[in-house]
Amino acid sequence: MIRIRVLDGYNVIGGNKILVEGEEGCILLDFGINFASWNNYFEEFISPRAGLIVKDLLKLKLLPRIDIYRSDLTGSLDLPKLSKEIIFAFLSHAHMDHMGLVGLLREDIPILSTTETLALIVALSEINSEEKSRLIVDSRFPGSYPVREDVLIKPNQKGNKNPIKRRLIYFGDNGVSSLPLSIEDIENYFEEMNVENSFQAGLVEAKVLPVYHSVIGSASLYFTLSGIRILYTGDFRDSPLPEEEKILLDIGENRLKLANSTREMINSTKGKVDVLIVEGTRTKESHSIITEAMLYNNIYEEVKKHRSKLIIADFPFRHLERFHTFLKVAEETDRQFVVLPKDYIILNTLAEINSDWDFRRYLGHIRVYHQGKGSWKGWENSLLQGKIFNNPPIKEILIKPSEIEKSPGSYILNIGYYELPNLLDFSYETLRGAIYIHSNSEAYTEDQNIDFLRLLRWLRYFNIEPKGVREKNGSLEFDRIYHASGHISPEGLEALIEEINPDIIVPVHTEFPDWFLKRWDKKVRLNSDIILY
Ligand SMILES: [Zn+2]
Image (cartoon, rainbow, N blue to C red; front, side, top):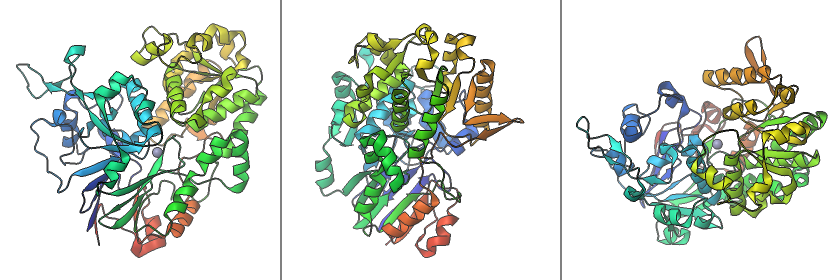
């Protein structure tokens, strides 16, 4: 028997937490934040309380009530136990709506993922330092205050540290050595589990299959539990059409290889899937829009048009592919691409994992911005002092705003919404007529609308020309020519499901499950608790 519990992420986009229970044990698929319900209670300045986070989230029903959380965070809470142990938790990719709560999971639940995803989670959590998504954690203990004893405090002093050792299973070549951490930290915080041992101990047969999505390292999981073959897609997008393949190959062989990974996933599973757990983000759309291959040309044309102007590029950095698009454009238009120190750390980390993404072949075209701020986080400090990632020597590629001011048309500067204050480093003259390219998602929520209006206010103040987004009579318009969706088109999804031809379809990550019902009727299961076979 198989039981599939969609603990969260049902009839909504994001927040995937799916538990598959079989005779051998349970498998947890993703453990992300459901932003739709999260944002009902929290925003930037209202968060769950650090030492009480699990209790707080359970009370608000933002976490499933089962015994899967770090013991140091649950204390005396008595949560219902699972009938069988979790064999592993699979993280499909490093987006918050899929992995944003992984830091709360019990340390002895092995985490399975691609090396890229694990390294990204470690790097991002070190940069942003949020307890809920951190893989590296120090255990907390009850405070010794007269008022409340259940408030958990974190040891601050080095000697006091009480690391929690997590168990990691990698899919990929470079194992723990690719984590952006010192050997000492790796030894303190992680226990590496051998893929072969864990899968062949008779527990479960599983395959991590890379797919094409808007973050590097994304993957699907194909596994057999209680004799049932299950494919969990995670998030993914279409493989390129033949005419796009040529463009991708021109930008780089690694681009084509990555783009074809969805195709390969389908080829290796078609006709061999009993249960398909599949995303349906774009099922409400009636037509395909721009693809990753197409936007390269749009960005190139835009940059070429404005020879003497500074270009400001706004895109998510963990979407490494997009960075390589901009880097290629920088090379072709004879500019240098300027990244922030925190992003340079991500670039180096990913280049170490997979040499396909080594940016150093464009060395003459990459610089690291010397931000005008007075305090640096641990990693930024180590980077700027040449203690990590010092090849090429960081001193040689650091660039100050004053150098950019001498020739603004020679640079593309990567600044996103949260980095807007960096614009204050430049003179009005430098920024007047500069071009801001919005190569990022549109606004979907009211909060995001407010953020965009604020972004446009910054641009207006400095007379920077926005491309890809504008304000018209108080509302926002998006051009959709510099950004491609990370999700498969409805046409692509329909073809994929026909080709894989599963017996049972479980739609997740979608607001329109009826789309599936209309097409595959009896095969589709729309409950959040499904018992099969
Ligand atoms: Zn995603």
